[in-house]
Image 1 (spheres, rainbow, N blue to C red):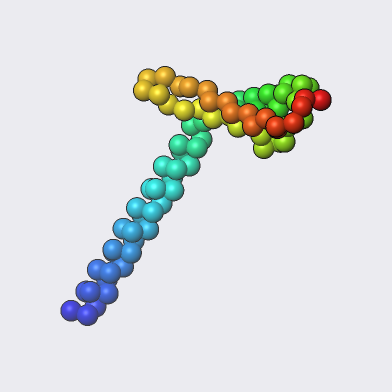
Image 2: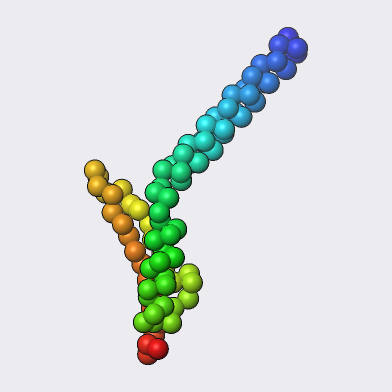
Length: 85
């Protein structure tokens, strides 16, 4: 029986590895589902905002959020407290 238990444990290990791989693939697919233009949009928004306000590179965040059947473009800009340029 010891040999069969050993083989059975390998099967459980293989099943665990398979499940983990499926999770990783699902995460990759969800991140790949984001539109390709978001990084470019973020960069261009940062350039425009910098014309008027001195902001940090990390101050502009652009995300695409699902809201039911609709996609919502969420743009967040952290403005400095001081006066503009």
